[in-house]
Length: 169
Image (cartoon, rainbow, N blue to C red):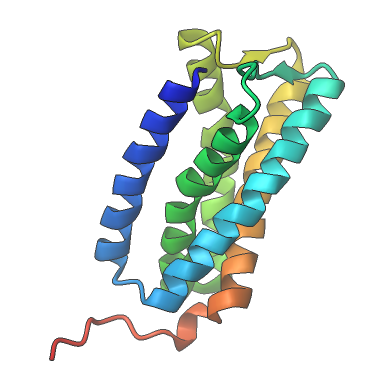
């Protein structure tokens, strides 16, 4: 993946974040919480990539530029932030059961999505054969959702304490 492709992805997900902010009626503290959750998850994801590459489960070729790791990190942080606004609404409406269902769905849908990307863009990601890379990818998705949601909750408070309607003056 090139730096230009990453920057394009960051831009598109930034637009998606604005759309999700609007449709979830997120307050400023909730948006900040989601962004901080994305930032923390970005670090976790870099660690998961490094670990799984060391174990030979997958390979994500980084561009040789010194700033590419930062662009990749920022990309992960921005792409994950809208997820936490959705999990906030799910937790607000359905509680822990709803969040558990959301995590289960993401853990099942995430690996096939990544394998599709890897098959379509082999320069972006290559998976090894076997069950271990699939399970590692699934566990990474679980971590992405749970850690980011937990950080957002720490920063912005529990979902049930938020107002849901916009106040127009």
